[in-house]
Image (tube, rainbow, N blue to C red):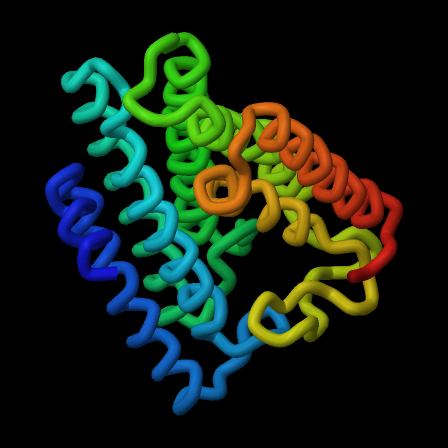
Length: 252
């Protein structure tokens, strides 16, 4: 772990330190969730920022690790700042709304909440466009300073991420992550995925973290490009299955 952190610091100091900040905020919000029992949208008020700080911290370190494989240093710097800014402001808005005791997403109950909801959507779209650009470059760039199977692990992880980002768009179009319910019922521990209704967050979670799962397996488990692609297709089909189940209202 120490060698990983030293190398990550060398590769991208911005995403390294911001990742640490998010992990510290994860523990802070986790502590608040233990001692504060206020409820927002059917769960502890601090459950959502706890999840988002952890997930965003992982994403920051993930991008900090593999952006350096892109040839253009100027593009790396732009991508790094865009990722840092969008994730920082997204988690900050979620944190602020939890302090206020109101939902952060799909909340248009008054002008201020509608503005915050609009800012969240804007940040998500900017982040998605950034990742789409990164994905394009990873497929366009022919020579990588890493093995072929690891290269394809990164490519397929990015591609799955982009494809299933459409789930976030579906949620915003519906102004809810729930199919068949109001989204306020208690769900499975930690994730809060609904046990009564279809929940789009499952496919969204799998899509977002394909960016870690597929590259890690391609590096540690697989040794051939075809193995990476076959697993990526299976991962895609599994995520698609959870999306279809959610869309027809079948719970986790």
